[in-house]
Image (cartoon, rainbow over all chains, first blue to last red):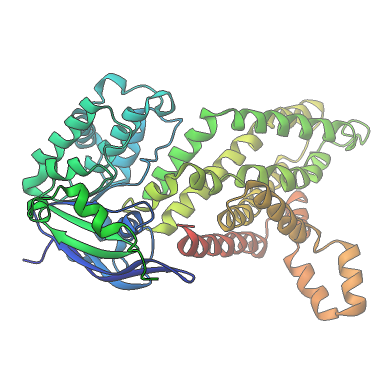
Length: 243
Length: 242
């Protein structure tokens, strides 16, 4: 069977600037891919293209075999997506917001209630279910975004900086959650935190200036007695030009 | 239909902020004040809502763009446009849902002018069929202005620009049939004068206030809405990530 996420020669140009340059990779069930790179490397743009929000300039992306450009609604049904910054409607309560997402995803009645309860349980939101989202702390807001992405138990999860703004305990819980879900899903997370990659990812893709520079297990990247941080710096720091 | 889910969320959003209440109060105050002062509601000695219907389209010209200017700009500012458009619904359904919410909101504001209807019925014996046709006309004008405003809002991140563009384009449709415009055009480019008269919102609206519901007028308003909603969907598709 084909991989759950297939990205082939994906590029995105904004005018003269190439944000993503000929990126290809595939993610199978059971894999957790850590997407690493400096700011502006093209991580978020790649994820936005995979989620069908940014239209690629070239190349294709498929989720569960559905092309995100030709068949966007079918592709999005299989995808749980946490956009960068975890945007939510601030005036809604947590329960109303998840209710809205459930209705859009086609769940009604008790099935919707069950799914909302399950997602709230996974993201530990029961205590704030009737609070307007704008009154919540940054960590809770991020978890509301996470609950929204997990609501329909999708086979593919794309999470843009899922642990940003969480305290160390919450980070630990989210990583635990990702590890628990990993066996049945294909997961891509982007992060700036290198130890997170070692902690949850089965594979690391390092991207800079729009190009994939490394794609291997964290162990393989670290192999020759180097830390992941050294590898990351060696790969992504601009090479000093010969004078 | 996902569009209705989007519309429901949007409409609840209006009432969760002061926007809805400020809009409704200002609309009712202005509509009432203009009807009774400039419109000479009592002095005319006629039991109809003529003065009221004269002013409503002009009020909508400024108030409707105030609703639509934040329609897409707000989603962009909050980043929720990325959430909405990565949910499994066709984009046109999101466009339609937002429009329907704004239209329902205008319908609520219009419905709250019902004391005027009670007043004329108390004072005299108006033709309530004509009044109903007038209200239908108001609703269609609101829908046309909303569709224009929503499309303008999709084009720019800046709410002020969205507001000014929407007022300008709506004004073009409102003024197209006025004698100033048609006479000016018929002296210079007669072909355009015909077109201007055909596109005039005001003339068609006046048919409704006289109690005439003509199919071609209804079709005109619906196609105007359809055209701008389609433009809205195209713009959103091309500029969603900007």
